[in-house]
Length: 633
Ligand SMILES: [Zn+2]
Image (cartoon, rainbow, N blue to C red; front, top):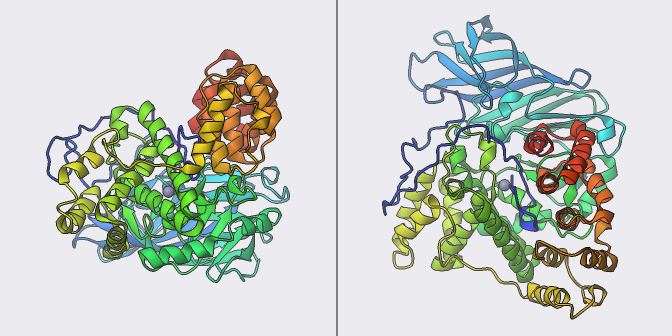
C-alpha cells in the first residue's frame, strides 16, 4: 500500500491515507547517538508487536480454514474459522486472538465446546479473545459474525458501483483490520496458510488473495487456497459483479464489466513488469498475478494482496500515465509479501524497498525520462512531509507505541526509505546492489523481519564487502534520525526544465498561458507545472490557465486533484462545482483529504466541505471517513 497524506503528486499514487490516531498519546522515540548499527530507540523492544494482543510466542496459529457466508442484506459476514495451532512449548494451552467488533457465537476444540472470554475493547486495537485449549487439541473453531461497521469491510450498494445493478463488498486488512472480519493473530510476524469456502448470492463472484480460478463456475460457492504462509494483513476478499480478462500468461484483471476493457488496456504492461522484476530480483513466488479493479470508494491507491492486488479505478487515465501504481503493488510481491515487516514500526522495510523497486521497474519498462520525472516528484512529496511532520514522525524506524498504526503511512517509510536505498545503490554500484537485493529476498523469503535483522544482514553483507564506500554511522542516521541526511541523492529531470522555464515566463508576464508550448507535455509535466506554482495566484491568472488548458474539466484524476487544490486555496469559484463532484465521486483518501483540509481553512470553504462530505459519506470507506471527518466538524 502506499501513503500520501500531503502528497499531491504522482509517486504517491498508491496512497493510503490514514492520518488517524491523533487522539492517542504518542511517545516520541529518541534517536540515539550510538554509532553502532543497532536499535537505539529508548525502551522499544525490537520485534515486539505493540498492536496485537495475540501470543504467538506461546501458541501460534499456522493455518486458517474459513467457511464464510456473505450477507448483503444484513451487511455481515458470518461463519466459522478453524485455526490450526502450534504450541511453542508443551503445556501452553491459552490461545489469544485479536478481534474487533466481532460477535462470537461458539468456540470448540477438536469438536468440543471450550471456555473463552472476550476482553475489554481498546479504541483502536479491538479486544483480545482468550481461549483455553484442552491438552493435545490442535484445532480450534470459532463461530462468529462481523458487525455492519467492521473497520476492514466495506459494503457498497448497487448505486455505488460502476454497473449500478449489484452490490459490492471488499475488505482492507492492513494495518490491523483483519481482526474486524476474522478472529486471528493479527500481527505481521504471524504467518498462516489458509483455505476458504465463501458463499455469496449466485449472480456474484468472490475473489480472494489466494488461488483464483478465472474459469470458475458462477454459482455462489467459491473455494480458495493460499498455500504460501502470509500475515493476516494480506488476507483479502471481494465480492461483486466481476468478470475476468487475461492480460498475459500469468496476469489478468478482474473488474465490473463496464471497466474491464479499459482496465485491461491501461494495465497491459503488467506482464512486462513482472518479467523485468523477476529478471532483476529473483523469481515471482506466487503463481498468478492478477489485478482487481475496485469501485471508486476504495480508500487507497492499491493494496498488495498476494496474487490479486486491489487497485483504485482512479488510475485508469487512458494513457498509462499513472501505472506506477501497478509497479508498486507488483513490487510488493517481493518486498512486503515475500519479505515482510515484523511490526508496523518496520513498515519502511515493506514500503521503502517497494518504492525503490517501483522506480526501478518503471525505468526498466518505460525508460530514463520517466524514471527521472517520477524521482523528482517523489522527492518533492518527501520534502513536503519533512516540512510538516513532527521530528519523531520523520524517522524510518518510527515509534508507534500507543498509536494507531494507520498513522505511520506518511511519505517517510515510502520515499525516505527509497532514497536511503538509492544512496546505497549509488555507493556500491547498481549491479552490486541488485545482487544484494536478490540475495536479501532469497535469504528472508517468507519471513517477517525487524529493522534490527535487516541491519545485521546489511552489516554482514554490504557493509563488509564495501567498507570503503559505506559507513555504519551514516546508515544509523538514515534509519534513526529525522530529516533527510545531507548529501542524499538528488533527482533531476530534463523534461521538467522546460516546464520550469514555461512557468517562470508565464508568472513573469512574458508569455500568455495559451502560448505555452505544452502540446507534448505528459501527465508528469502537468503535475510538476501545477504543483510548483506559488501558493497564491490571482483570479485573472487562474482564469487564464483554465481557459488555456481546460483544467477544471481535466479527466486525469491527478491533474484534476492538483488543479482543484489550487482552486480551493485561491478560491477560484468557476472550479468549485467540480470540487464538489470530485469529492462525492472519489473515495481515495490521498486525492480527497488534501482538498478537505484546504477547504477547512476558511468558513466558506468549510461549508462546501460539509455539504460534499454529507453527500459522500455513505459511499466512503470507514478509513476515509475517519481521516476526513475532523475537517468538517
Ligand atoms: Zn505499498
